[in-house]
Image (cartoon, rainbow, N blue to C red):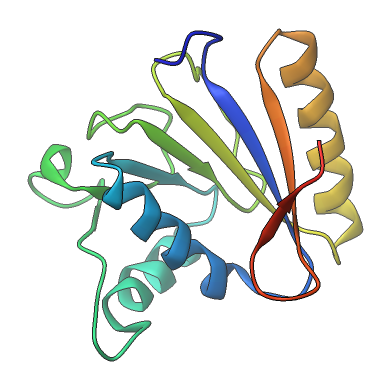
Length: 153
């Protein structure tokens, strides 16, 4: 774990959708040698991502599974509604307003939220305050005018 505890990075989606951003962030996570846990409160989202991560790009796919499958603990990317870190992931991705649960076992927690959705924006602001008050090192990333992300805080 990082010296200051689990880093919490907020990604403010403004021009891109979750389907466009998540695979790229997961690829970077796997390139670091880390495993990823993608948590959502929505079973439909798991079903969608289960298919999307196999087909989002013609020349590649992201190896993954979900907690309802055998050997979930061996998956480099695991899709879940649960709070347990079944696959021993270093990176936790929170989407669709998923509850963070205990984050101390992770290197990084990535909160992805749609800046065009007022309720998602409001929840992200509350989570920012909660993580900051708990002493977690937090960062805020916003989509740049061109491709890529810019650290704002």
